[in-house]
Image 1 (cartoon, rainbow, N blue to C red):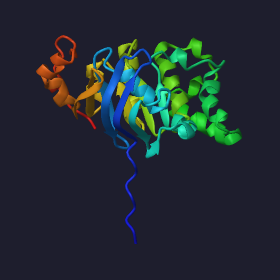
Image 2: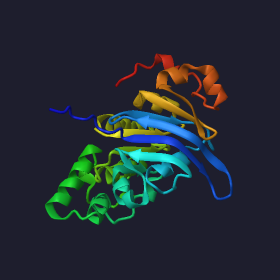
Image 3: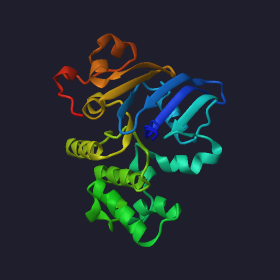
Length: 255
């Protein structure tokens, strides 16, 4: 009897290089593997190539060299519909994702577009809203919600597609402390792989046991988040600064 094979990593980036049409080289041979269920922070200064990397994960940009695989599936033209279901990107501004008259319709949009109907669609919407604690707001217009609530609904629109990997772009930006904590609790409770692009280093430490520093288009470091944030020389070299008075050693890491 053959042994069951281990699931493919959620994300495998191998030798990824990319230059924009104007000749600017944004990525130089990036290698990154994220196992299923991991939560990884993607750190780096502005202009490091973080956004360029993320746009390769669902085929918005096409690799100049190298490969990207999501759950073993190559990011190629003939796979794009499935890849875009598996890679859920939550943008920094929730208003880029919410455009329907009600929260329910926003969350239903993706699954409905992929063919779900009736009770199955309703179940998918209810489940996604429950995961982010927004069930009671299903019939509200999104623009009547607070910014933090809109961000949670934006997460639900992606969860409704049951993605393999959730990519969050600056998830804590513009959130008040209570909303920030609520979102952190939600993200910790999800059974999904998370790649979090952030400048908020304490939030990265709180949520992601592992962090990767991308600098000038290449991976400069890949380690436990706490170890990276405690390496003052490394942080300085890549223009990463902790908030004044914040000591990463003082944080007890949860899993």
